[in-house]
Image (cartoon, rainbow, N blue to C red; front, side):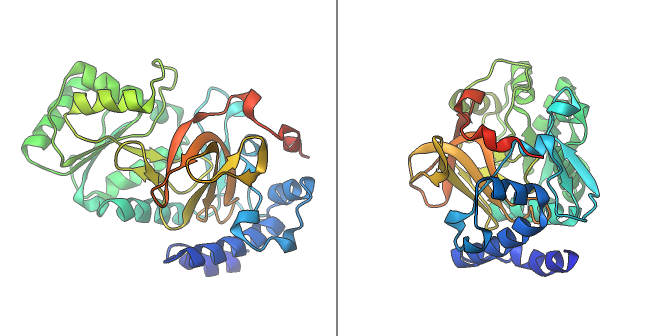
Length: 334
């Protein structure tokens, strides 16, 4: 297993074309289909003939709920880190067993620089109180490393100190420094309710989603409108990631997301989880994340989305409620 991982890892972050992606995705599928017990059991339950899967479009996607009830990891590998989703009890939290943290680190560092510039060019400020309180967050792990790599002494966490944070933002704005302000939605709203800003376009204000029960949920349009006005910027950026993935998609405005070359989003039919929708039709979001080399790279999420006309872009429309999920009988596994 380690030999396969060491051979395929350099290929993942060197993808140059759709053909490269498809070839590597199929190679990883056949590896995981045999070596990941949970994925193998799922494929058997849906009567998938593994050897006949010869295109990305015919790869079955593992329901994301299984990360709450099963150890989704390649057999015989020992996790060096376990990331957990937010929640109040361990029984309701997804767990991602990560065997090689260097893959995650390569993914988020290369992913950020793919859409932006080197993180060393930015002061990184983080407003993530609920994630820090919860612990074991993959987002906090990523932000920790971005802060350390930013090479600016001003970088760090803003820990519910609104007056200090506001003063720091205004000072950085006066100095015309490039800043990444990344935060959970409710914390960003708390900040602009304390004070309105005119930060300017050298600031990247990035929301990671989620009110975490602290505020009433808003549509993306309403949230971004409030944040643009409150921070004095023309666009709100967004990050789309989750505990079960080791890669992130980014939006540089209007909640239109794009993926790095080793990640791809497809939209499944909500009535037939093995069929895919065409552009501009909504459905369930399926993610291929090749950085999930040692767990499962093919995840059927509980998010609703749409592939847009613009090549390689997608939008997030919301989440399924339990009544919308089809094929749940497939989730009962030993």
